[in-house]
Image 1 (cartoon, rainbow, N blue to C red):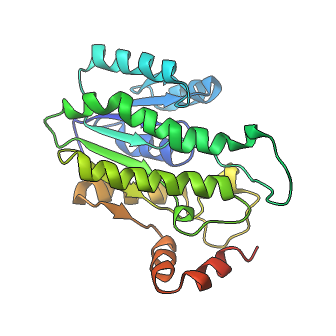
Image 2 (spheres, rainbow, N blue to C red; image 1 turned 135 degrees about the horizontal axis):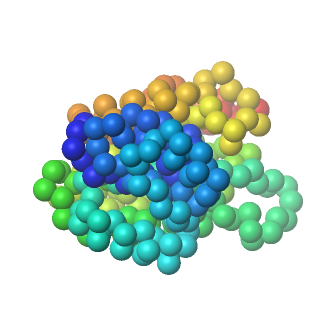
Length: 239
C-alpha cells in the first residue's frame, strides 16, 4: 500500500498505533487521538505523521479535523475508523448513565466520524476505503461487557446498511478477538492477539478487497456462532 492519504482514528495506541507503524513510511498518515500525552509520545517515533487532537464523540472536534484535512489534502483515500473504548458493566447493579460511554464512543462516535469524513473519501480517485474496527463480541456478547458488545453489534448493523447505500465506497469490517492491550488486561484468555498481527491482517485484507475479516480465533468463533450460538456463547462467557 503506497501513496495513499490515510486517516487513523485512535492511532496512538493498540491496533491504531500498529497500523501507523506499518503505513507511515510509504503513505501520508493522519492520526486523530484525544490523548495529547500519547500524541506527544508518538510524535517522537513517527515524525512524518500529521497529528490532530480530537475526540470522535465530540462533533466539533471532528469538524475541526475535517477542515484541516480538507485544506491540506482535499481528500482521503482510506479511513481507519478505529477509535473506541471498552468498559466493564455489572448487570447485577444499577450503574450511572456515564457507564454508557461505550455506546457514545463506539457507535455514535464512529457514525459521526464516517459522516464527517465521507465527502473527503468520495473525493478520492484511488478506490476510497472505509475500515471499521469492530469486535467478535458484536456477534457473541460477553456478560462482563454487555454495553461494549451492544455498541459493536449496533455498529455492525450500521455498516451493513451503509454498504448497501454507498456502492462506490469499499467498506471493510474487522472482527478481532480480544486484543492484547492494557484495556483487556482484566479479561483472562489464552487467545488474545497482538495489535501488530491484527494490523498486518487488516492491511492485507484492504489490499485484497475483503468485506469482513475475523482474525485469529474470531474466525472459528464466528463460524460456531452460526452453527451453534448457544455453545460458543457459553464458552466465551465462562470466565
